[in-house]
Image (cartoon, rainbow, N blue to C red; front, side, top):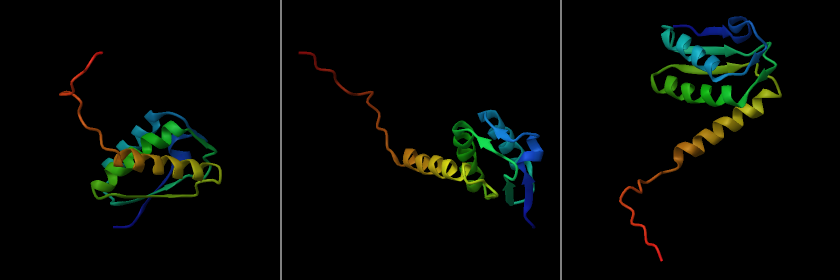
Amino acid sequence: MSDKIININQLFSSQSLITRQIARDLYGLIDQMPEDSIILDFSGIDFASRSFFDEFNSYETQLNLSGKKVRIINLNDNLAPLYKLVGENSKKRRSISYKSVANAKVISI
């Protein structure tokens, strides 16, 4: 099957991606597509919030686990570092192990 290209600017009729809901909507659209390889074209997107990229990153991971390959093209020079930073921070969060403290004893002096 060939790659499916989605122009984000045209899809959302906006030059800005601000909310987490936009990332959820994008995930829902991609998840329903029969194609396994999706290209997201960010041409014309001038701004995206950290919240958008954080939410998108978590969904991107889910899509990859389900066998869908998502690739981003034409991310402008201002947004590329933010996208990379959010992805790196997400990897760090996933590598942290949290142990339950439910059986901890409290000692008061």
